[in-house]
Image (cartoon, rainbow over all chains, first blue to last red; front, side):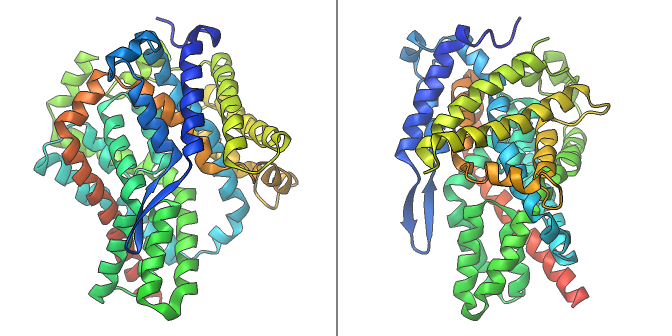
Length: 274
Length: 164
């Protein structure tokens, strides 16, 4: 079986993507405000939804234009299409290299805190919710683009792991600002943590999560806005610089290992099937 | 075995050599798509967008070549991100030029084509998983975000208290 045929052979697929992407980009970013936070609607979400609607596996009638072979060819295109994004992402880290080195031990070490999802969310997914391999994709990281790309590269998006990471990614994108502003306010009102620590933790996710989180903290400590924003920003930069490697070389192998221990019979069965 | 088969395996995958030429060709196609979206998403000129996308293309192409020929394996995205960092380090002779070239390219618009392909790549299998355990995954997602935030705050707090 040859994977994607020649470019012209698959013109239907690429034309569909072009049309969907242009429509999505024209709708542009929309915000539905809820109190201090907002539900954020991004072009990438419309693009996903629109292309699901012209997927013949979802909407039968779509098979007139998009056939099974286009669906098949779309899969390897996902990794390739995410590459320019990852390249751009690298070029935003390079210029801040020196700042990152100067960031200090607290900022660096709090990156370890990102592994808390492996310690808490993974057992919950496995034992409370009885999830299978989708738990690996869902809980190994905070599911931002670099983490999504890791799962796509390793398992493909069309895999249980891919479904897991995709759902967390979409939830994070849609409700991330809401979740983070509520979280930050809650944690701040507990009175246990210093504002500096909570500010650093604001950087674990996306840019909009960062904004919502540091906004909520600035509301709690009005005099500390500058400190909060600076620490959150530095932490976010660090997360983007190190997050890909930590989740690739630490979190994912650990989760894979835990999964094998938790579900010993399953690994061999799955291998036989594929 | 094709890229398709490699991508759909659910256990540890035997490493396939990436097919350099077809990948570079598909990457060029995606870059043209990306260029069109940049014109919609940003105010940069068509020519500046060509320069920016060409810069990103070269970084990706370098990453693809490294994925294929480097003596040890790293996923292509890890190579590409490393090259992106190396290409823009401020103390290198080329750093500021590359940074200026790609600076105005919009982040979010770059991710749109990938999600469009993703929506088209879904089959019954994935839809079944979402139908069966979608609500569980939703709750897990909230838990993932919350535990990551709280975990980072706890570690930062402890380190700050120790180091003063």
